[in-house]
Image 1 (tube, rainbow, N blue to C red):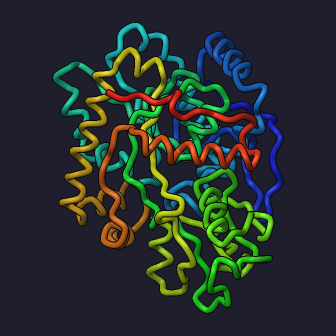
Image 2: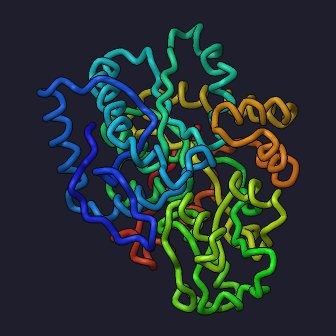
Image 3: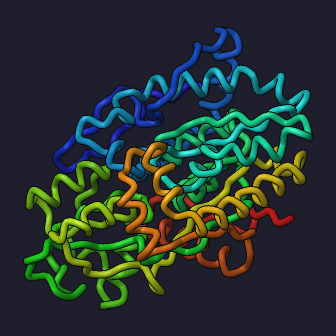
Length: 389
C-alpha cells in the first residue's frame, strides 16, 4: 500500500509539518512494490478512502508519538515518511502469498510506547509460536493511523494503537476489530501548567492557550476535563500541535497549558518545573487497544488468543521486573530508563483484558464525542467491531 499524497492539510499554529504526505510516517526500509501489484493495490485503497481524506488526515497529523527520541522539532518520523510507506508496500506485496498459507503473523507496533516492545525484545511470542510453525514479523509504525492504513491494505494482521485511531478507521469503513485492551491509564493522561503559573483550577483556563493534538486522546481529555467545570472547548484557545512542538511551545512560554501523557509527563515531572492541573482519572479513562483485521480474527481466532495470552504473561513479568523492563524500554523507545521507572512506580499500568461491556462503553463515549466535535463524519458503534474469544 502506497501512501496517498495531495491531501488537504489543516493549518497548524507555528511549527509546520514537513514531508510530502500527511498519510505516512517514518522508521522503515524496504523495496518498492512491483509496479503492476502496486498499481492495483493503490487504486483499490485510494477508492476505499477517497470520500473521506480529511478524516484520516486529522487522525494521522495529530495523533501523538511516544518518546522524546521521536519527538524533536526535526522529527525523523515525519521527515522519513516515504520510508514507512516503502515498508508497507513491501509487506503488502506479500499479502496474497501469506493469505494462501498463514505461516507468518504480521504484528504492528509503535516504537515510542511500552506496549509490545517488551514482548518483542524478549522474544516470548516467537518461542510460544515456534512449535506451531508460525513465524512473527514485527512491523514498526511511528503512529497509529498508518497502522490502520496498513490493515486496510491487508499488510498487517494485528497491532496495538491508542484509543482514537480505530475510531477514525471504523468511521472510514476500514474493517478493523477490537480484540483486547490495556488497563485504563487516566493518571498518565494530564493537563500541565508551569510551576509558577497563575492557573490554579480548570476554570482558570478560560481564554488561555492550551497545546493539544487534534483528534487525539489529549483532545478527548481536555474536553472532558472542561466539562467537569461546566465549560466547553470554546472558552479556551486550543493550539493544535504535534507532541514535540507542543512541548517546545509550552516550555517556551508560547502556550499556557499542555495536554500530554507518559512517558513525556514523567520526563518533565522529574524536572520539578511543571504542575499538574488535571488528569483523566475517573474523568477520561483511556486505554491502548489490540486491533486486528476482521479477516485475521475470523480465520485465525486461536492465533489471536495465543498472542493476547502471551502478552498477558509478559505484562506479569514486567510487573515483577520493573527495572529490567525499564532498561528494555530505554533501548526500544529512546526514553531513559529512569523515566520509565518513575512511571512504573507512580502510575503502573500492567495488564491486558479481553473486550467487555465496560471497555466498549468507554470507547463509545470517545467516539460519540468525536462525532459531536465533527472530527468524524458519522456515528460509529464500537460493539459492531468487537471480538471476544
